[in-house]
Image (cartoon, rainbow, N blue to C red; front, side):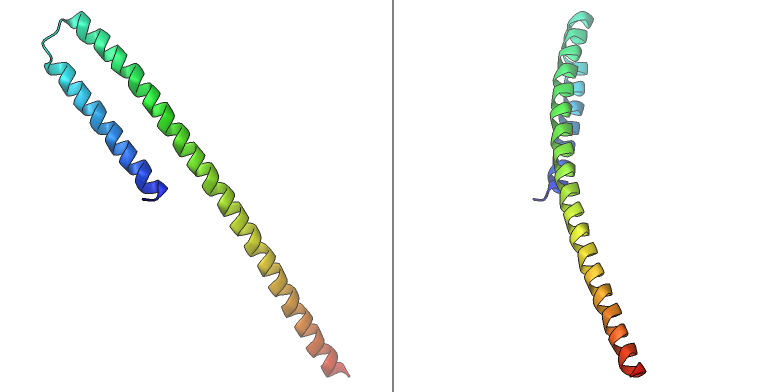
Length: 99
């Protein structure tokens, strides 16, 4: 599973947990005060999980960015080399025609 699939799976899992938790809270036979306390507790838990997932995503994006920077840098070097060879070849052709 690649990082995009993992992120999607994690987001789906988190959404399911949140929706399930809210439904369970709404149907639970508790007083309003107890329900509000439980909602607050679950909100803190969700905030924690979301923070962890966000950190994971930021780390994955940072790694991809470094990979892309290296790939682009390598391609720039390749293109410069190819252009330099092309220019040198054309200069040799011109020099040969002038002699």
